[in-house]
Length: 304
Image (cartoon, rainbow, N blue to C red; front, side, top):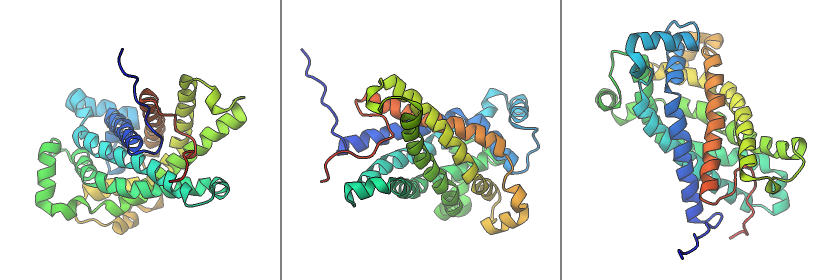
């Protein structure tokens, strides 16, 4: 008889490693799959004339076929896999550490603040991992004459601006991603709690894993809509900044004005809502597969 599979201890190094792998799968797979929508969104933000998402997809497909719709998939897959690793892994670590800084009653009373602080801290690290790949992705997607993809796009950007050029969009990326991630994790956590408390009739642990995963998906989509709105203006600036050599965030904001900061919001709501729901679903499905509980709970292990 084969030995029984060893159970992963909560908040152990193996636990955080599995959360990081779940993050890689969650963000890497979903962002790569929605490359066509992201491509249209980035082009709308940088001056391409499409009558919405569907029209943009049709025009791009006519010009470059199915392959054209996945322009920039390489840096997308690498960048968002690295971001997912850091985002989810460090969030779980920081959430546990921040809860342990306080007595249990105090931590539970201010758990929303803990969620916000933990997610913001994780995203600051995750964006450092993402930034170079995001720069390549946006340039390839918004300037068809620049490069075909990652293999020739990265060397060209490196030759033009070096490492610092790859990170010139880091500050606006933080401005986009940190509020997004705070909303993504905090809204998700609180929505899960609200569903079990006000919509369903039993505590979370009395539902099957499949039922818990359904709650994960619904809460993820709700969180995603909020994410799209709070992060959109900075997303527009990042797209334009990476397309235009020598531009500054302040100069772009002055040029496009307040209304211009909301260009492409419709496609982004659709993309981010779907993306966030799928990310949480993939993340929790992976956790269930390796024997871990679904997301949406506070740390319960004894303090170290």
